[in-house]
Amino acid sequence: KQAQFPNEKRLDLFDYRHQTTVTKRQINGLLDFSFIDERQNVIFIGPPGVGKTHLAIGIGHEAIQAGYKVLFRNALTLVEELELAEMKGELKKRLTQLSKYDLIIIDELGYLPMSRQSRYNLFQLINSLYEYRSIILTTNKDFTSWGEFFHDDNVAVPIIDRIIHHSHIFMLGGESYRLKEKVSKT
Ligand code: ADP
Ligand code: MG
Image (cartoon, rainbow, N blue to C red; front, side):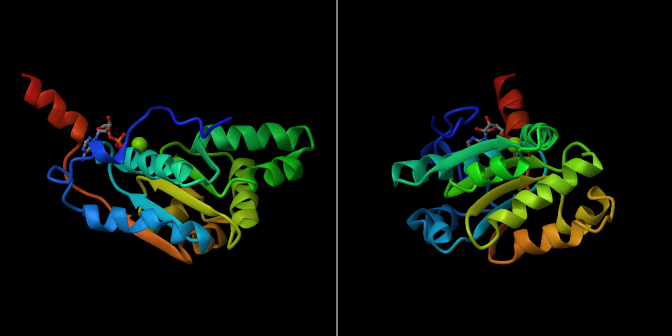
C-alpha cells in the first residue's frame, strides 16, 4: 500500500509568489533526499492554510518517486492507531511496522488535545524513529507552546528535543491560501 495521502497535491502546483516565507530553492534543496538518508526531520510550522500539508505531500510524493517508502498520517489518526495497538498489547509490533518506512509524514500535530496515554504513545513512536527514520511534521504550534500542548508532562521536553535535533525547520506565515481562493472568486 502506498503512502495514503489525503490528496494528490504536487510541488509543481505550489505558488511561491503567494507563499513568500519559503523559497522554491529551499524546498527543492530537500529533493536530493539527503535529509532522509541522514535521518533528519523537516518541520513546517504556521497558521492554517499557508501550504504546510501541500508541501509535505508534495515532498512525500517526490520521495516515493525516488524510491523511498513513505507513510502519511494525520496526527490524531496516528495516535488513535497507536492507542488501539496499545490496548491490544501490540504497540511494540506497530512501532516496528512503522519504522519500516523511510519517511513518516505526521500532519497537523497540535490542533487538538491528546490524552496523556496518547502523548506517551507518540513519544514512544518518536523515540523509535529518532536517528533511524525521518519525519515530516506539520504543526500550528511553535515550540514555545509545545510544552503547554503536552501539558508539561515529562514527555514534552524529550519529544521536542528529539524532533528538532537534526531538523530543517520552516516557519511559514502569510495569508491563508483558502481565503485567497474565496476572495478571488467573488
Ligand atoms: P495548511 O496545511 O498550512 O493548513 P494546506 O497545505 O492544506 O494548508 O493548503 C490549503 C489549500 O491551499 C490546499 O488546497 C493547498 O493546495 C492550497 N495552497 C496553499 N498554499 C498554496 C500555494 N502557495 N500555492 C498553491 N496552492 C496552495
Ligand atoms: Mg494542513
